[in-house]
Image (tube, rainbow, N blue to C red; front, side):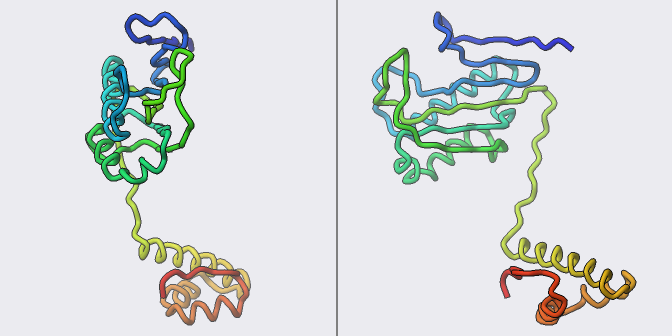
Length: 207
């Protein structure tokens, strides 16, 4: 099946480095975007707001939106400025997406950015994204477990591992082992585990 590759350039662009994005099928690869303007002196979070607006505009031209982004990489020249203002940045990012962002996210510190062969001393942030635009995307979130829920889930996994071990060692039926293990208090479960030597270095979580 033939796939068309489409290249989008900013108005008036004449050099190859001025390609804003490339679309192949439903995938859109956006070049790193920075805040527009001449002399850049604004704080990082204000620049970030301008960058997200640029990205949103580019995606809109392709009949997409911020929610179509699947991968986002942020480059900053001063990580300490980002860390000192991460809550403001997070609020701007959520506002840009219109919801809690559903893309994978990475942030890296770099020394500087290069534009038209010259280093920029004012730009503090660049954002590079990949989007998947098909017009039928539905965003769903995997529920986030609390620490207590994570500990319980891990304990159940360990009990299931022990269950298989007991069945193999004793030749017991699954029903009898289930009745013994799944109703077993934590201290007795630990003792049985130690006696059988079935699970080493077990982390039982909060006691």
